[in-house]
Structure formats: structure tokens, C-alpha cells
Image (cartoon, rainbow over all chains, first blue to last red):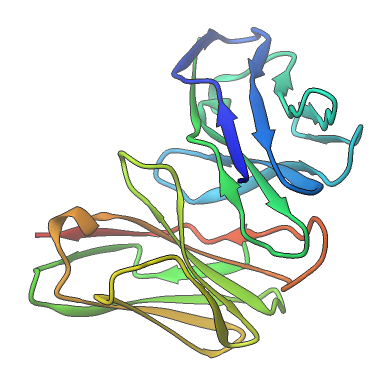
Length: 112
Length: 114
């Protein structure tokens, strides 16, 4: 079956620290991969995506590279800010069916 | 502004009440979705509509009744809910098919069943 596994949180960092949130997937076929972010009290916002192997998605200083050989899509940011505190969800869609399959989410807390 | 608007943002209802959640998308999409986000479970897909037709019902109890009168509007009718149904209900939309089409979410409706 199709599934997404994320590193468990919470992740607590100081401002300007380097961030990595690990995400690996299992999929039949060739998935598209997404990172969504949920700020406190809000819905989900698309952060970035990649639709084929070796693609790099990027937005707001965040990056993730679609690695087919390791079935991974790790999220990175070089220097986090307090405003990045949120829950981050890795997700995939397989084929032509737009059914997002989510990981459990990773909570990030950045303190000054 | 995400292009997907949900109302109400917060709802408290008793177990014998009947209420509805509303979702409207302004993105010209053909597919709409209901997701449930509760504290103790990952995000769960509930229903999928493509061109107003329901194409997915993820074993959702019948006390949740979706309605999609057109491609821009989606409702979730609620009746005789249980306290464990308290959750954030997220509406989303996308183009119906195609590799990598992005799914856009609304801000959600926080439901509390008392």
C-alpha cells in the first residue's frame, strides 16, 4: 500500500538553527510528493512539492528533494525563524487520483 | 486567502442537533474533498467529489452526509454526532486528475460535540 512516515516530534530549535524533518514513503507507482504546513489555529497550506525523481521543491527558504533511490523527501531549511513554528505534514499522491496520503505530522517549535 | 472558504469556523453542537458545514472554492477546480483532523489520528480523507459526483467514501458513518450541488460548493450535513466526532474538518479542492495537481485546503471548521 501507499504510506508516508515522518520523524516524530516535537522538534525544538533555536532561531537561526538548521532544520531537517525526515520523510520517507512507500508507494505503488510514481508518486508526487508534498510538504504542507499548518500554523496554530489554521488549515493546511502547501509549502512545496515535487512531481518526479530528482526534482527539488522550494519555498520560503524551505527545500526538499525527491529521492527515488531512498524513497525520501526530507524537508530542510538553513536558518529557522520563530514564525516557522508550526506542524509540518509530508504527503503523497499516486497516479491520476488526487487522494493525498499524509504522514502523522511533525511539530516544530522555534524559540528566540 | 486560500481560495477555499469554510463556514462556520467554529461550531458547538449537541448530540441531537442537526447542523451543516459549508465550503466554497473560487479556484475553478472540479474536485472537492472533506478531511477530518483529530488530535489522536493522522489526517483522514472522508469524501471525494469529482464533477459533483461522489467518487470516494472512506467508510464514513452515515451521521455524516455530504452534498455537492455544483463544482464550487460542498456541504457536510451533521446529525446525531458523538463526542468523538469533535475535530477540525477541512475542505479542499483541486483539478480532478493529473500528475501532481495541488490540493488546496480551507482553514477548517472546528467542531465540538457536547
